[in-house]
Length: 275
Figure 1 (cartoon, helix red, strand yellow):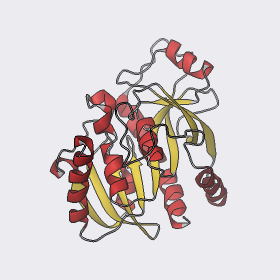
Figure 2 (cartoon, helix red, strand yellow):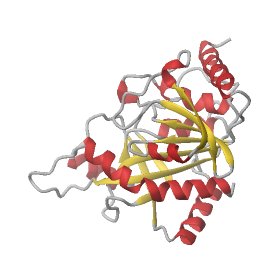
Figure 3 (cartoon, rainbow, N blue to C red):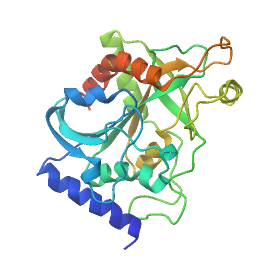
């Protein structure tokens, strides 16, 4: 057996045994400062990443490093309370391992969230942006021999973010009085924040928001045929007209994401209920 498959199965077997018969339908990835959605999961079971065989440990600011299994929106969910990033020094195989473990555990839909810089001038701190498409500037997690057990060699990316889930989000946001933006997410490596010239470049190539995650997870999920809904919390205005004393600060990013977490949590919870 391919050692990559063995690693997925080994980790997934541990998680499934720890879940003691619970069958998650929905997977959720909670980004920087957005871990509070996990507090709304009923009857929670915490599975620390450090306890899972062969599993990476999240070291990023605002990421606790747990799977949380429980009930949200009337369905059994498994949420990543903290994700794995390429900039932490992990290879792409490890970055997407948690997604593949959740798929092996039985999820049928994936929700991904992140904190992102608003490259578009129409985006401001605290905005919620539905991710309609992405531009990938990270290594592709499917490079290497294809894992035929998981999906095809050349998966289609025409609609990486599920149109029916985007439609549902618009409907619920209207009912809840939540204003949603929509746009293209640019995934780059980090961990340094981008220069003003890079922000301008991302805007010129069609990007609306930029971050250091999410895209590899989406590619891995779509490789396996799992529909995805993605949403960004805009935590800083990544424009190129800064004051001379402006600096990007990681703590400010987490604080801005935390402030918007309530609206995002309510949206995702009701989306899960209506799946």
